[in-house]
Length: 145
Ligand code: DQA
Image (cartoon, rainbow, N blue to C red; front, side, top):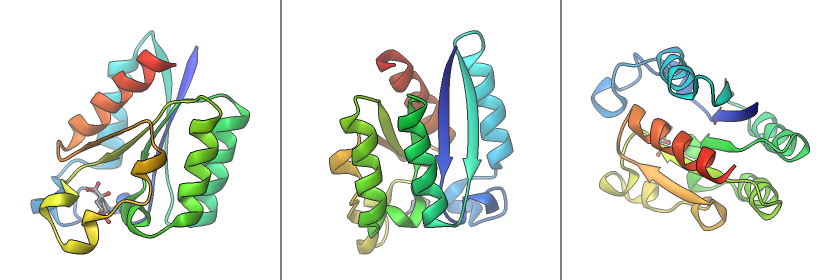
């Protein structure tokens, strides 16, 4: 069965209590539960979170080595990490789907959030829909897996 890596960057481990007016009240565990339900019988969901850039890059290398589709919320790394961009490019240039997701709509927020260094090498981007950003991204990667 296809295994989808759902990778989350810095501060997303605080979801539930982190700025609930912006990010909602669901925890990452709640998001995992919904994705597992959605994927039942179709894919395995492996949801991970790290605050560490190197760890996140290592997981993207793992995605290539295991031919796993990826749903990625790069969090603040979105806006400045060229190292993460290069790792995403390794995934997508290997022919694996990778959808960038955001709970909030970065374009409706501070200026620095309007730039994503990731989007140009992602398969697609879904933002502003809360947990539905993840659920729609899961459908998109499964269609392309
Ligand atoms: C985020 C948006 C980013 O700008 C921010 O740094 C995050 C979360 C989102 O899911 O809306 O940490 O990626």
